[in-house]
Image (cartoon, rainbow, N blue to C red):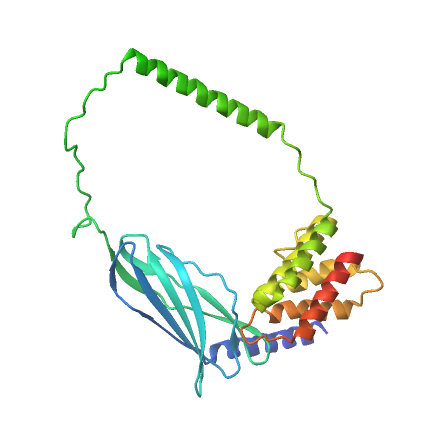
Length: 291
């Protein structure tokens, strides 16, 4: 029996390996400039041709050593081929021959499986604004420093000013120490209040941000109530942790389907109806009230 399970595992591994080797992603990258000065903004564009119906996740974390990311647009180009463009606006903050390092880009295949590719590395020359040789100039005094002579009255006034500043600082410290203590709000009431405010403002909030904030409200409350950090858990980890804690009135399969909606909300093609948004809100509110 063990031999059969090992053979089956080997077959599955071979299938996954071959699928990755034969993947059809075509990735390229381009720069608006190859030579800039420190503090300049440069456009870095990554073009990815994926298999049909594959989708790139809208929420991703990127970082480039030597650059600050000012803006990122992910565009789906409607052609015969499934093409995405990731357009970065980068601010250079390092001098020299700077490498724009690779970043992982996550996407979902047409069959629903998760996958990723890496952005190509690019090199850009970043020059100093102080000189062609990138060397710092010496900064010298234009005039000799003058000796300042204080009159006795000035000394008295300065002393009084220092005493006054010290007195004001003392009063501020006393006021801070004697301030009314903040009333600690019940975590359940706080979560329900935040959820209600979020739902009331849903028309002015992007649908992906709406689902992200709703999930954060629920997970924050769970973390406070059951003393485990739920914010960093994956959906499957969070479901396994919550399954034994669910009351009899909540069906486990219904709860799992509810969590899967938050995964779908990360992708650009996710467009729920107002009825679906209301159902997600009602289910979240019910969880906050009974957990």
